[in-house]
Length: 342
Image (cartoon, rainbow, N blue to C red; front, side):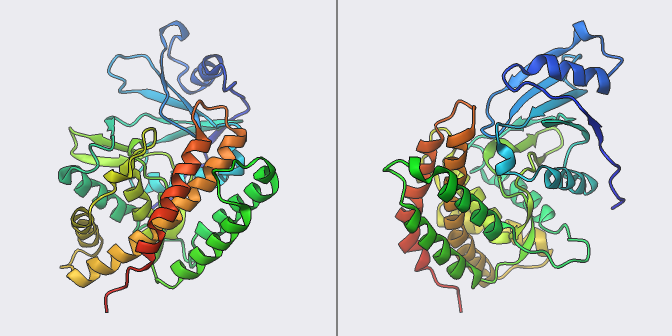
């Protein structure tokens, strides 16, 4: 694909607690022909990393600018320059909306038509087939000439170091001790590195609300590329399977059953290869995915401990961290016993 053009930058800072004045200043730059008094706005409250507002003039929102303001101290969690590169890379491959500009503490991009999915949608075969196909498409985006390295261990190590150094004294009794976390991290790295999961371009945060279904075009698109980057194929899929449980009312009874997973993985492999897929290949991916789902629990638990310390978003991050750690320890024995097919 052609090289992405440089993205406009505006030296504007938007107050996260009072987004509208700053958002409207950005709109004057991006849509000078819109009359300020005609601009309508709509707040989105689902996100638990950033704050988001839509600005538009026409009722149908055909031309709509999303203004996203980065959450407090999220630069500790997210490499913002990398996010912009990912955005442009995915855009060049027809997988992302237009990126209009960046500003001091956020970015503006095109609104994608469609509906954000919920946990009840992503388990429908008709829709999960589309999700598997879109993930397979993104996973075929190549690193330009370099051998990609997975971001997982580097990121998890950074998160762990933050937890250990900045947050440790205030950790609640419900969270495993730092020594235990360190042991588990070493165990995960040793156990998962042996699985030979391919390193591909991953979204790394495929929760329901990051999947937009356009019923008129009959496809899904993924949004929010803050955590995107090269990573283990099985991590991206296992992380998505964990998201079947939801975010606000987490319920791991909703984790996809083996049969559902095998069907999903079959769609994925078929889309990726374009040739017939053997049951052994599906089984192999099934084992890898369920093992990497452990790393996903650990990753987002560490992330939530950091968010709990710094975020101003109204969400119980500590409770979320405890839920993810608990699930990690609950399924660890059973999952680590899974064996790769001969």
